[in-house]
Length: 125
Image 1: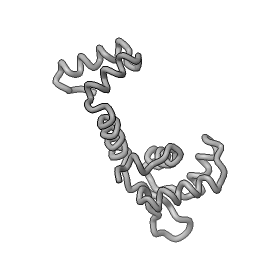
Image 2: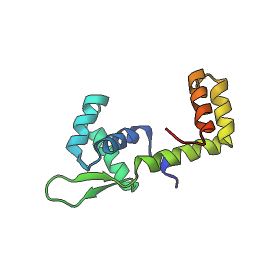
Image 3: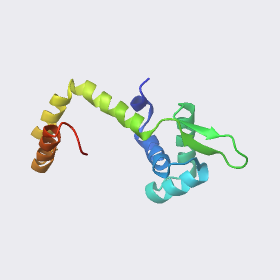
Image 4: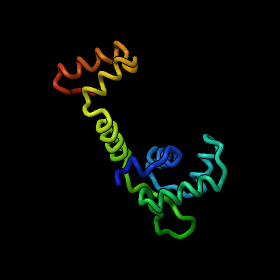
């Protein structure tokens, strides 16, 4: 099953913390961060961590003391899976870009930046 189908929006909040920190974190560290920024309780965070573990998205590391959890999926892998899912829904990147322009999701500055990017052969950002 594709990665994007496996990670719920709530679980994504856990993953974002792991990706941002770039290291394994204990359940307590995850709970502290998510309690502060999401106002989630201990059992919610534990449930999300266990779900991610059971889905094979994160793994507990074998260490003495509290288990630390590390991602098995990188942020780039996740974003690529999301990109593929969106493109599959639209049929092509061109159709997606047209929809974004029509719906006002790309500003004139965005369009100019893309124009320059393509003129340069995709070099730069």
